[in-house]
Length: 433
Image (tube, rainbow, N blue to C red; front, side, top):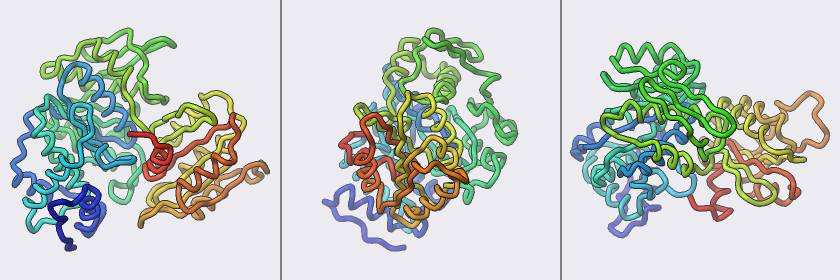
């Protein structure tokens, strides 16, 4: 697919539009293209590298690692995806989002180096992050896998420590339709002789199987590391290190202690490379933030934002909603991509929602509001409460506006289903990310 390179004064938005038309497939798994271009760019990456894969919990684990390592005084790079509002969120150097000019400069280098090779949007983004990290005099970089692990662009990086946070059914078209198949794909971020952290409490056997085959040093939740706690504080216990008297992470959610334990297991496994004092752990956990993950905005009605888009994440979201204060009615704004298991996701939330506002998402992968509304009606009880309403809208902002109009002050508005649903609402509310 041909595309004319943006001119010398092109904006970041123009560059991103160029990247969207450059490759024939939006998702094109494989490492040959990006590895060849990376070699041409002579990437060195002379810093500690932590790669984080998993179905859910990747973003939270990455955010905690960044916050703790920054608190310990290290120069930290963070690469995550997708973004909520601005592309710049994907690439952070020392706690700050990369600037437009910095990113454009890397895009220009990649464009010059790729020659005849067509790269996807995600491959361009990954190389841009690595180039910025190369130039950033980093001590450590935390890199979130986009999808799977084996053929994900991030896997060109040889991790000093790799984490698999959880394994559940998602992206079946590319990763397989069982936890065993998906676990095997994710486990390919493990490297021989290096720590491999698995935080899934009930991991598929393929995780340990591949770790043994690769010669990685497998750390398993419940065996090599764990946590304990009471209402006031919690403690991490690893192979050779215990951290007591920790404050609960600033991130809300039922699974955050598992994610925090995975981060601390990684830090313990790298302690010969990265010394992290107890106070840095405490401060990092207190200061960590991650928009769009069980994010509750101040004011009335209560607004809850969560990018949950698969059954596992939806179940956790339902549990978190149940743990909140009493609200007379919950209004749910939902938009989802067509390749997600919408029926299973919506079924998890159906018992918690009184009024549904189903939104169309743009693009070839987006479901329409009408399609989602039909699925919602299908997961409601045979004799649903007459007060339950289901309506559809052209976009998330329109749906959210209607929810705000109809919600009483003491009600709760939930926005969920996709980054493409939560992002526009954050932007509408004028929230920075």
